[in-house]
Amino acid sequence: MFTPFLKPVALQIAAMLLGAALGAVLFGSRGALSALLGGLSITLPTAFFAWRLIQVARRPGASHVNAFFIGEAIKIASVAGILVLVRLLFPEAHWGAVVMGLIITLQANFFALLVKH
Image (cartoon, rainbow, N blue to C red; front, side, top):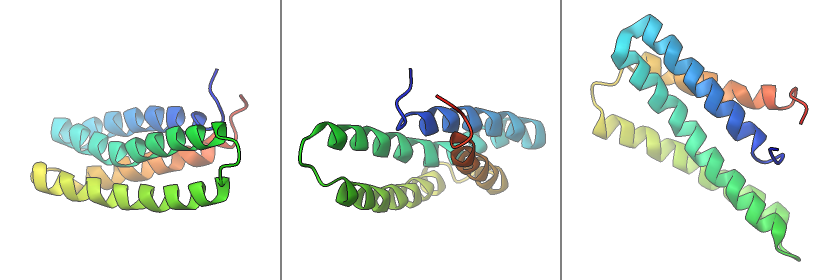
């Protein structure tokens, strides 16, 4: 049973794998890895953000609003940082596939609203 915080992460993992498969079909193995890295740049910060929100929700008297906005800012900075790392550590990445994986993974958040738990 997924908590409401983990449902978007699970859907993002599924979307990330779909993006990697699409990257493989369109751009080959380099495209698959690139799309996977694009998806990971969204999924990893989202998973950490969800974990952090779960921890804050368990603390009595915690400021949930502050935790949300600070966590969201850290998540956005983390996404940018991971993309910079992808550029530095994997310079031969196919950036069309990276962006495709990123966009497909981001769209999973909209489907999270439609899936009943």
